[in-house]
Length: 156
Image 1: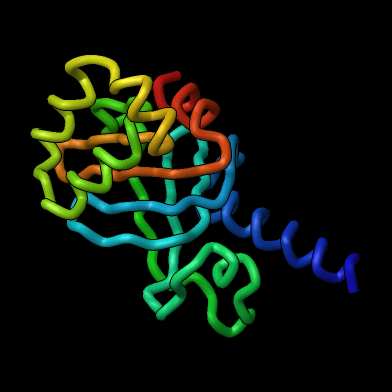
Image 2 (image 1 turned 30 degrees about the vertical axis):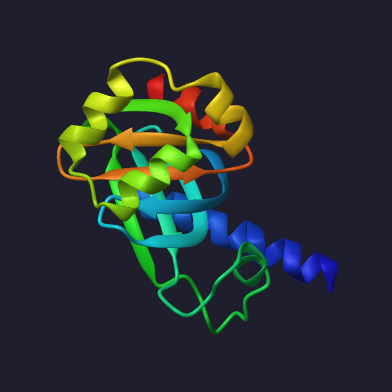
């Protein structure tokens, strides 16, 4: 059973690489807030030219449900951003990013906030941190187990 599951996972990532036309450089789970005020759990991955967040619009409410979903309830939605379109990326206090999402802040306002300086170290320590990235049209707040790795990749 374990070997079968391992094979399915390898096939999934091979299919994603074929879809993108290039190798995947980094992948993880993510609790993501979209600039339009949406919140979802899903899979985040990046290649040299794209950042992709796949999630389901179903009623999943936790990361556990995403990790252990039934196969027939696959990830149905996708946000695919050309990495060349990313104008700014920074680690921010998660609480601040969630407020921006709740208010549906426009991308330009969020970009100015994250480009203006460092978020409070105390706020990030107490409330957690997340990676915020902006394009001209949208922004995402990505809470992953490896925020620093994602920031390095997005800025690289």
